[in-house]
Length: 340
Ligand code: OGA
Ligand code: NI
Image (cartoon, rainbow, N blue to C red; front, side):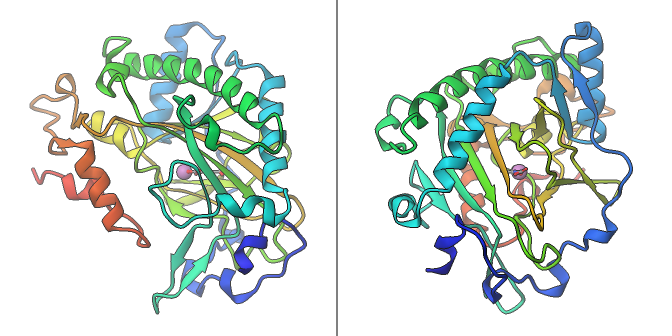
């Protein structure tokens, strides 16, 4: 199948990848101005809390530097996942699936055009939980040979970073440091998704990832290739490129955080565009609730001036609605909105 060869270039833009006119990226309209805030975690913590809080309100996205995760480990993670994507197609074939209930899966995203035909994204995605790893370790690639070890090491550091970010975000909301972590349960769902975007001869006709918000997560941390951009976020109605900053992580809020913060913090639409000459790789790690977590605006954030914008729901209800809306531009949290 054609899409299975996307790991190896060069490629031509065949019809499977060509977006209908109204879904194309219009790259010339990308704003060259404001990129998302860059926050130095070595600044005094009160300042960091305030900067993060403002970024969460205004952008839903920010980058962090001096975050304490060793650069050398991140470089190894990126090199390892790149090697995996660049294996010969037949070595990757066993991981390919369209069954999203699989724990470990390699797949291509698609979007439906006006006649319900699938248009493939110019990317390949590889997804599996990043924690706990013990139960799935045997399902992970054995080639490249260091894959399992590097993922385990990376996941450990990401776990520490995620908890630190949840604490800083809790404080930004005026809550106890451990509020969000507690709220998201002792058994959060923690998927990772690596994205591989080969060079694309015509970036105007394709997208690497279609416009989306991170619906299932509260918090997302992304490591991206250096020296090439691709991730774009909506700011004031315009697409803004997220710069590539050496040894930084991109952090963004997911829909579950928008709900928990009662709309104060935003889960913002974003997409990945393709690049004519450079490949790009990203590793996104997500932090989401457990199936039985009850989500809804946190009580302390509700008062007469801030009535609840969402009703309470079990995360399993959200997941059910999410799966129902496959192939569409999903509107899931909207089904839990309260009309005040
Ligand atoms: C994602 C995502 C962005 C990127 O995986 O949800 O938005 O830069 N990735 O690849
Ligand atoms: Ni995303």
